[in-house]
Image 1: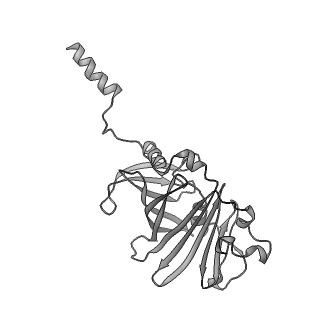
Image 2: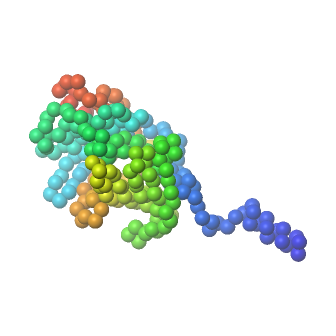
Image 3: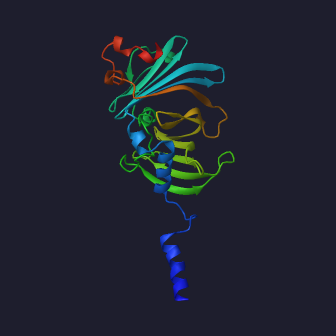
Amino acid sequence: MKRALWIALSAVLFFPPSGKTQTVDEIIAKNALARGGLDKLHAIKTLRTTARISEDDFRATFVQENKRDDKVRQETLFQGMAQIKAYDGHTAWQINPFGGRRDPELISADESKTLIDNADVEGPLVDYRQKGNTAELIGHDPVEGTDCYKIKLTLKDGDVRYYYLDADSFLEIKYESQVRVRGAIRYTETMLGDYEQVEGVYFPFAIQRGETGSEERTTFTVDKIEVNVPLDDSQFSFPASKAEAKPSAAFK
């Protein structure tokens, strides 16, 4: 009996049950692995995403360019005009011809929050502790019939995201954002799908975003993702002249 008891205890100690509860760090690590692994994610130095935007009758071309560390530039081309938003790691600025402004102007800290969040090349889940974020596993929650792990990520500025990771693939299929702007919280949700591999990393090629509770959605259909393309630091910085404020080569 002693031998049988020792074998039973050994099985528990050295071969724990496969159905044991996973920690938030284990799930986030599996998410990074599912996307391609930390080495490949860290190897991304620059990123260019070209997509088509649609919202009701509105159609436009959208290009987002990222460069480490924390640089991002977004351009929306519509009827020959380009709206530009950019952040160089310190300063956020925009050119908004759709609002009648053709000269570059600074963006307030509150209004630039979403833009700055998009400056993170691999996203805030990867290396979340080093980025000053905190993570908590809420449990399971289905999204359109798919069982998901739900993770609460509190960003270093206090804003919150709830991530829904497919329990089988560990890829993100949805996240909800709570962003405080001028004392009020904006609630939005983003759906992610049609993952494709580019340079060994999986990216979502279908993205839908809108306010929580609203049926209106902005759809981004990604046409191309380019990894480690040459990007000059100057295109992220506040322009010193009108010549520097022109749309980037991505639209040419």
